[in-house]
Each structure stands twice: as C-alpha cells, then as structure tokens.
Amino acid sequence: MDLAFVILVEMLYAVASLILIGAGLAVVFGMMKVINLAHGEFMMMGGYATITAVNLGVNIFVAMLVVAPLVVGLIGLVVERLVIRHLYGRLVDTMLATWGLSLFFIGLVTMIFGNTTTGISTPIPGFAVGDYQINGYNFFVILAAIALLIGVLLVLRTTRAGLVARGAMQRSDMAAALGYSPDRIYMATFFCGSALSGLAGAVFAPLVGLVPTSGGAYIAKAFITVIAGGPSLVAGLLSSAGVFGIVSQIFTFAISPVIGEVALLVAAVILLRIMPQGITGRFFKGRL
Amino acid sequence: MPGRFVKDVWVTVLVTAVLIWIMPLLIGTYTLTVLVIYGMLGLSLGLIWGFGGILCFGQTAFFGLGAYTYAIAAINIGESTLPMILAILVPAVFAALLGAMMFYGRLTDVYLGVITLVVTLILFKFMNSTAGPQYVIGKARMGGFNGIPGFPTLNVPGDPDTYIWGDPYFYVCAVLLALVFLLVSALLRSSFGRVAVGIRENETRASLMGYDVRARKTVLFAIGAAIAGLAGALFANWAEIVTPSLFSLGQSAEIIIWCIVGGLGTRLGPIVGAAGLAYLKFLLGQQAVVDNTLITGLILVLFVLFLPKGIVPALVGLWKASFGRRPLGRIHQARRMRGGERANG
Image 1 (cartoon, one colour):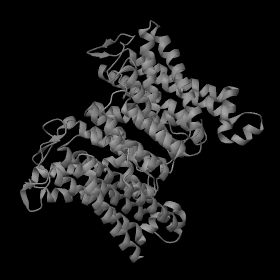
Image 2: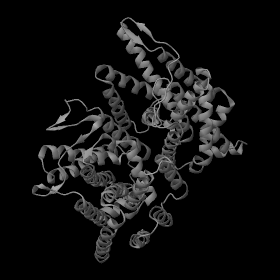
Image 3: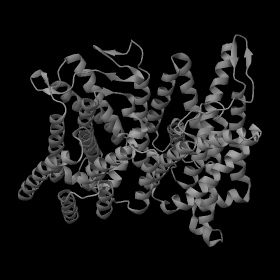
Image 4: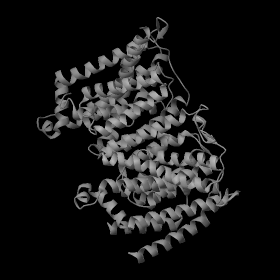
C-alpha cells in the first residue's frame, strides 16, 4: 500500500517534471514554430539565477518564481532581437543557430561561475510514508506543473493578449492589417517562452547539482516531449508528458533508472514512427 | 564524364601528395592524424546532408559505433584487419536499419533530427551504464563511463606483431581519407549520386519520375555511416581508448558545425571545416582567457546568420586567421571545385 502510494507520487512527479521541462519549448515551438535548442541552457541559467539570488539573501520562493523567470526572459528577449528574429520560417537554420547559442551560453556560464557544481538545499522537508521516505519538494513540483498548465491555458483562452497572439501565429498578415505588430507579438511570445524555461530551471535548481553543462540533460527530454506532443500546446504537452512519464517510471521501478531513461527514449522513437505529426496531430485536433 | 573524373583523380592525388609532404613540417603528425580523421567524419555528414539533404543530428552515433566495434573486435580477435572491416560494416548495417525505419515511415526534417538525436542519446546512456562485470562481449569488458582501453592497435594486415603507429599511421590515415574522398567523388558522379542530389532538390519530383526515394535515401544514409564508422575505427586507433563521450551531444554538434562552416554541398568543405575548426579548437585549448565552447557556439551562430553557405571568402579568411599563412594548393582547389560544382548544377 505504502509502496503503491510512493509509486503513484513518483509517476505524478515524473509527468510533472516533463511538463515543466517542456513548457518553455512548447510555447516557442507550438506558437512560433521555432525550435529552441538553447532551451536547456535557458533552464540552466534559470537555476544559476536562483542560486545567485538566494546567496544574495533573496527568499528562495521569490528567487524561483520571480527573479529567475525575469532574468531568463530578458536573456531570451536579447537573443530573439539579435538572432532568432532573422531566422523566422527557416526551421533548420533556427535549430542550428540556437544550438550555437546553447554552446555559447555553456561557455559564458563556465567563464563566470567556473566549471564546478553549485546547489542549494530544498526548502521543503521530506516525510515518511510507512517504510519509505518521500521528498516533500516533489509535491511542489507537481503543483507548479499544474499551475503552469492552467495558467498557460487561461492566458491563451480568456485574455485579449492570448487571442491576439494566437491570431498572429495563424495569420500574421491579417493581424498586421488589424493593427497589431507581428514583430512585437513574436518578441513577447519568445519572452514568455524563455521565462517559462527559466522558471522550470529554477524549480529544478534545488534538486540537482548545477554545472554549466546541466542544460544537456534537459534539452533532449524537452525536445522529445514537445515534438511527440504535436501541434496543440497544452493538450500535446499533457499527453506526451503523461505517456513518457509513466513509461519511464514503470521501467525505473521494474528494472533500473537507466533502463527507465532508455525506455523513455525508445518510447519516443516508436511514438514518432507511428504518429509522425505527434500525438495531437492525430487526436484532440484543433484544441489548445 | 570519364575524362573529367580522371583529371579529378590526378589533381586529388597530386594535392594529397603535396599536403602529406608539407603539412607535417607545419603541425606535428600526432595532431594532424586526428585532423585527418575528423575530416573524414566531416565528409561523411557532408555527403548525406550536403548531397542527400538528410540532416542527421546523430552522425557521431556511427562514429562511436565504429570505434566501439573496432575496440571490441580487436580485443577478441587480437589483430586489426577484420575489426577494421567490421567497424565499417556494423555502423552501415545499423544505419541501414535505422534509415529504413525513418525513410519508409516518411519522416522528414525535424522528426528525422529528433530520432537520430534520440538514438545517439540512447547509445550514450547505455554505454555509460555498462560499468558492471555482466556487460562483456567475448573477452571485452564494456567499462561504462571509463570506456575500453588497451585494445590492439592497427597492424600490417597478416602480420599481427608489426604495429602501425606514429608517423606511418598518419600516412595511412591521410591516404585513406584521399581514397574515401575519391570514392565519394565517384559516387557523386555516378547516376546514384546525381539522383541523390535530385532527391535533395525535390523529393516529390524524383519519386514521380519513378525513383524509389526511400530506398535510395536509406542506402545513402548507410554509406555515410560506413565512412563515419571507418573514421571511428581510425580514431580508436589514434586515441587507444574508446569512451562513451564519442556519443555525446557535443560531438554531434561539432560535426554539424564543421559542415556548415566548411560549406554544404561541396566535397572539400566539410573536410576543410573539420580540420580547420578542430585545429582552431586545439590552439584555443592552449589558452585560458576565453572558453572554448563559447567560441565554437559563436562561430556556429555567426555562420548561420551571415554565411549560411559557408562561402569561400570566409573560408580563406578563416584559414588565414588560424594558420597565419595560406597553403595555396588547397584554396585554389576549393575554388575550382566549387566553381565546377556550380556549373554542374
């Protein structure tokens, strides 16, 4: 019984972390068809922003939920203006340019913070369930993922800004004719996507020993989750994170964590082979 | 055009001979050997990406597979001729299977990228986790993160006690690169190569003309993997150890950067890009002011933004910047070949 509860929490946690990892990339890819391979480094910088802020005496939750998204969002803004802006509509070129950016940021952070592991302790203590110990922070991650999904859904569906953004993504010329500047909208969307990446990186900062190359651990998972999710933003993210999270946890508990990771990747290959347009390319068409 | 090809062969042989003679006077053969190997690896991606339009994010998977195959086979067999052949065959077969799965599923650009990336990651994670004593192939321990050291290196075929190392090994690698280059040239001049370029330009049109696009892409993909596998085996001989870092994302990124910088759609571009950038990295590694990765990233971004074709003037500038003096032969050859490439269409 206790074990069943632990496994349930771990599964929810795996799904939630995939949602968090993928969210920033999903906004940028789902809305703008830009694949940001520097996404992992955005997360890494979110983590560094959090740790730096905490070391400067900022409350850890403020650092995670406010400072990190703002800092990374601003970095994203600069990147969009300098690089991405010139490459809209050239999918492969943006991938290559952002891959270059990811290497650039790894180098930059290595020069600033050094090639050493930094970290902070988790702000929420763990507790025992029967014979097992559960990390209390896992619940925070699950809650953060739920809040994030609902937030994105609400912004896109109910606010005017969300409506304008969706309109501009579908027909930028029409949005321009109605008096909205697509250039500005793309800029704002990229800012939001980067901020979400920063937030995710910040949430994971207390769980991992952060090194400048930490981003590499995220990018593949984020990339796979988003591409396998397909065109719809929220539904795609939720469905693919659900599939991959559960598959990887089943294999993790049954065999070993490494096999769990490998199972996730194999599941991704199989899923893409069967549904080349992603899960929401076949099901839930036209949803958000 | 057999006459033209014969001329091409002579030029290649001549230039190779001159370079093999001159380059060791400028750079040590130990460094040169790895530059030549990287050149071959660059050429393998240059072939499938530049001429076949297949952007493979995991070319290093085949490089690593070649290296591992060689190491494992060499330990078990105890000499190097058969392992070298296996190191070419295993990646080629693996790529043929993977390619068949992808191309017969009609996966294109981004999805192709994801799958090749994921497969590379699977190999990376798997190889890293093989530390335990249960992971043994024949006599070879897989070694996990530490890799496989201490396998027999290249020997004269038929004479397992005469090892080829040091300067002679450089000559072997350089001659092999020239051979591969000539084979690639011949392939591209054949009807198979021309159809491959046709598929790159317009897949639908090629298939409407009756060519089996899926099969042709699969075969081209396997050929690229075979070249990468050979480069991997040569690398294993050079480094005398194989580690899972051969499968790392950074290594994949580098191969793509070489091709972009050197120039896609040319045979020489990826080789020059690989050797040039690897040497630049080697030089940058000797200073501690600026981080190496930062420069690599910056180069990629700047090239995508300003010189997405990796054009010749930039190449000449880069050559000048990294070497201080320019070996005229190679630049003139590059110019001539690019001109020819353009004229041929």
